[in-house]
Image 1 (cartoon, rainbow, N blue to C red):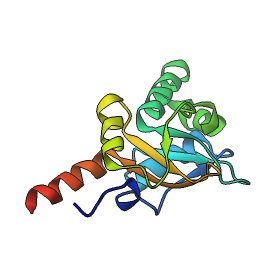
Image 2: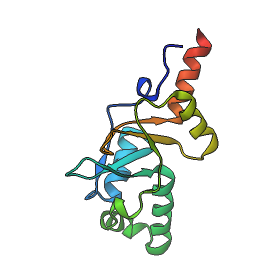
Image 3: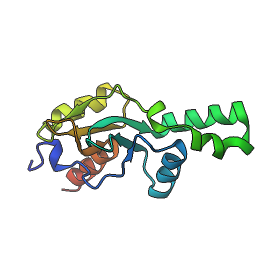
Image 4: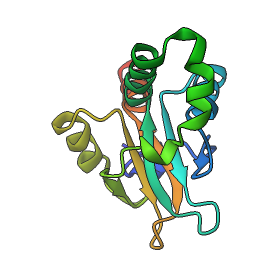
Length: 142
């Protein structure tokens, strides 16, 4: 198989936010771009700070709705910084990680994405479980 490492299938054209972004920014981005994971990077260094998942975002929004009601939701979303709710305890790999290692990550964890970073921990890509389904579909069609 020609595809042997995560760098061969990762998404390079990423949608990211920096630490100044709000939950409203993330909510709008997920809706407009039809994405479920947003890496959050330090604006100055480019280092990966964490990942905001759709699941975490929805849970936060549901909490805001419960606590403050629909009329206050947008205002509360604008007050909540993404760095307050990102998953900062995440795994990353470098772009040369073998696909077998990445498959094991998805099979053994409930995460829907894996970030790819360089030696300085700067984000260079992301791979999702959907990327593996796409790869599987390509291989099955051959």
